[in-house]
Length: 123
Image (cartoon, rainbow, N blue to C red; front, top):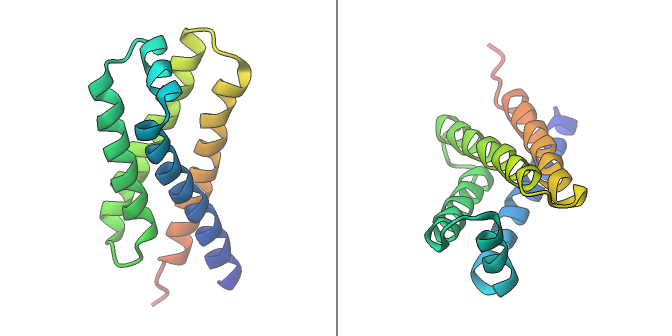
């Protein structure tokens, strides 16, 4: 059980940190704003995505948040990572731009899997 908790918190911490960091970068880095224009997304979508990423990251890393709410955050991040990979594929970005969200998706799936193992109550 201890191993499961360690894997859960490492993977969840990585996702939370990356989402908070990317949210900060989306607001402060003009190159990221330009990349949204390059993909064809409007500026308001960048702001909307930042807000969702920060809220989702907090939902995942705050232990007191109920599991049902965390499941919604996982679903949102799964959609976000798959959509990011598809967007980068469609505009012909380099492979690293496509692989990064897929790696984050894999880490997210590990976090989700171990959340269910850690939260399983044996009666």
